[in-house]
Amino acid sequence: MMWLVFLIIGFLVGLLVISTGGGGAAIYLGLLTSVFGLAPAVAASTSLFTAFPSLVVGAYGHYRTGQIHFKVGNQMLLTAIPATVVGALLAPYIPNDVYTWIVALILTGLGIQVLVKRFLSHSNKPVRHQGIQAAIYGMLSGVMVGVAGLSGGGPIIAGLLVLGLDMLPAAATSSYVLVGTSLVGLLFHLSANNIDWNVGIGLMIGAVLGALCAPRLLMHVDPAKLNYYIKPFMGILLLFMGLRMIL
Image (tube, rainbow, N blue to C red; front, side, top):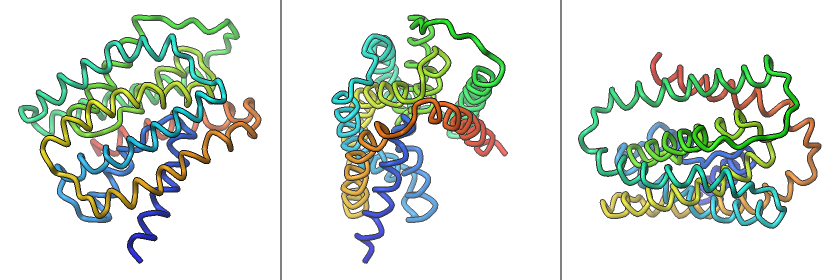
């Protein structure tokens, strides 16, 4: 019976995060600690194990639909992967309270930035992928992956939206970037042998099924409506996540 619960939860989260450009590890981390009662270290490793296969499947699906912007994605990866390695090496020495405040401030700031871009900026200029900005967002994402087992999707999707991508290509490009960072983070966390395989495998299978469906469903959605509703939703979600960590 519990396996069915894991499959359903994994499917729903996988469908949601691939559709919105997140990695899902933060959601799994919350579920594993608060609902399933796993210890934080075990939950961090299990969340990355659960999220990684669905990211690969989702990114490939987006690649097939031609939505990934490889130029800006590679700019992010150049800083995200080294930052993931550094974060994983420093993780044992960073006080949890300090990390919580850092991540909370990052998420809150990104949420505000996305909302300002959505409601106060009316520029219709062509997208310009500013290399320095892309590198900064990639670095923030990598640190989040390496330190706490998060997938780092918040800074990536927010950065892509701020840089001017519409929601669908932003979600696709984010999935591509997160494959690289999550793989590096997973390898570090695997070395600690902290994965709860019973919970992780069930969630992972469901997440892969959800990731298989997401790119196909998105191709049947009106891009204008997707941008209109999802961009502010992502901004509010980032803001909520950031404030919830410190309140």
